[in-house]
Length: 277
Image (tube, one colour):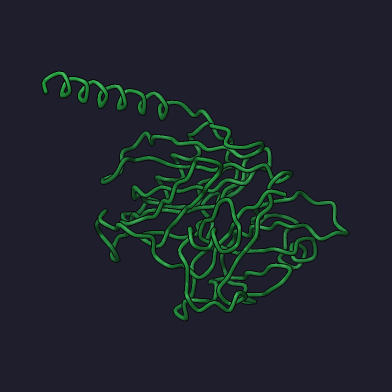
């Protein structure tokens, strides 16, 4: 019995040391060609949780994004990120952004080549665009700042068939756009790096967006832009690549769900997913 206990203690210690080693550096694990997984410990510890940021990085030349919505599918049984992945053959799924009280319409503009979920252009300054139209020669994926020179929604819509407008976190080329605040939450975000790669960003541990932006910009990931997708218990990231599968979902949100006890993924009506080209 004592030998077993020693083995268990040794294994626990070894595992803990191994995790610290893995998360101490910004190494990427290549899950498939052009698709990478990174897990990063924050310098500033969160009030709860493991203070871990999970990032999926996709090369848009090899992987394509798709917006999938309940309003297009007609399926009134709203799904979790994992369920959206299974039903639409998506390798990875993250929130598409915040939604209205009807639990369907996106807050801000959102469309694909097949469907317009919301035509409303609000004051949010971040627009992610992908799936370029055939007669254009623009990058496969970009996050635009609507207040930047020579940028307009009309031009974005002329060049891209998939467009989603969300609250801005980081303005190009790497400017933290949030002020210090007391409110904190779990976070799902969409990012772009210097090489034009797509980043799915998730942390269950709650941070203020000012502090999270600082952490992201201090990482060795070449982040240049990011937009907020969802916070609190509705924030999600799911992926399955070969034998690697993770279902991540948030919990803590100031003034809404002030605890780290959420044990299930909540249904969400709109998601951004990834498929291999």
